[in-house]
Image 1 (cartoon, rainbow, N blue to C red):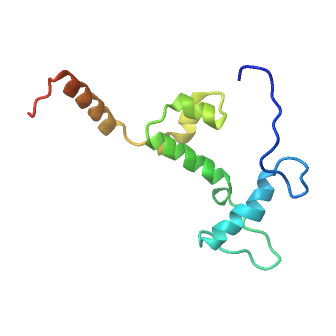
Image 2 (cartoon, rainbow, N blue to C red):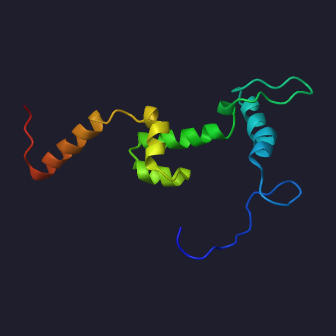
Image 3 (spheres, rainbow, N blue to C red):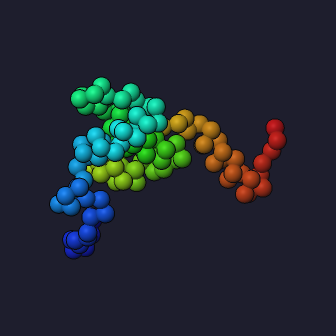
Length: 123
């Protein structure tokens, strides 16, 4: 990122107001109870913590975000930057399975090019 560092006030802080919300605190106090309320995961037994499963945490939102962008044809380099990856190749290795088939998108792009030039045949 270019330019001098800039300090901003945090939008989300810990309950005591001292610092950023920790991912684990948000998962345990807000995210997982919301998943329980929505019927996505079971409630923990009294006195126990929520099940430690990566797919139940905020990390799942990261994958959802990536899959939505890839499905809409977002540029992998832009997505890589958005996710904080230094290497777009890493992003491809992790998320390739989420990429839709590009066959239909490629055909549509070529068809659109021919339509613009007036050279489309119905054959």
